[in-house]
Length: 295
Ligand SMILES: Nc1nc2c(c(=O)[nH]1)N[C@@H](CN(C=O)c1ccc(C(=O)N[C@@H](CCC(=O)O)C(=O)O)cc1)CN2
Image (cartoon, rainbow, N blue to C red; front, side):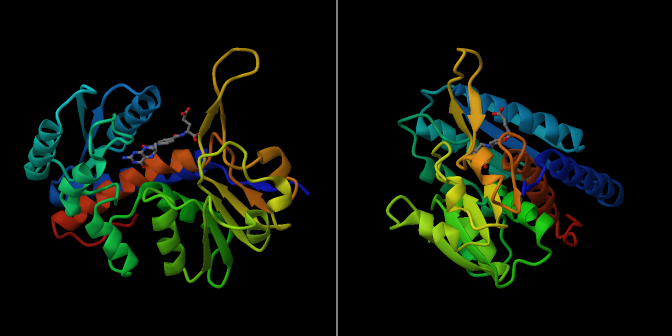
């Protein structure tokens, strides 16, 4: 059996279309243009690609996009001063600082400085705490995208056995909270977990977010399981050409065992930016006291 491919291109395009429709409605009914500010420090090539894509897609959705570029050797105080300005700017409803930051900068202090109401990355401890408490929170974009993809296959995740491999603040931990909110039974595994293959084989839903190329093998997967691959690992191409992108799952093995699987590229990564647009519309609506948007 070959697994159904959960296509991030189609799902993210649909979501972006729905965001654009909400933006049009909010502008027409309330005269408000949601605005997103993205801060890029340094010139990491992958971060450059992601920030360009955020800018383009924000504009395509009809929102205002503000890009701020700072040199890699910027002083922490100057970066914090920019965050302070963005917090105070009424045209900005969402603030995102592209990660990772260059060495020498304290990313926790930067995330702490973002107004929780504008924290469209959902990384500020206020939003992380609210999510863990089951309250309304801006939620990290990649985990949000993972849930949307899993729900393409399963209308409800209630009672399902899910494993999340990886415990980062950006993906693993918030994903666990979102799965608990969906009433799934969740195992969180990491580099120190014993017998990861056996834990994985018990799962109906596998979320791989470890950052190790093709670590999850085909024989770790329960037949028919849904596999959501969060990894984006750049590996040198054998012919010396452009680097190849591979996930945390050995796709060609897993696709013959799983019931459904996300590809890399073309899977979860595309949902990350689409969910950022969703969070910006949600933040703008909450800041202006508007009803919850339809996305
Ligand atoms: N502040 C943040 N920093 C980072 C986040 C984040 O959510 N917030 N996530 C990642 C990078 N990221 C968004 O910022 C991101 C990753 C991947 C993609 C994507 O579209 N991937 C494509 C492949 C693109 C390529 O060729 O590299 C795919 O998977 O098909 C978008 C955004 C770390 N930093």
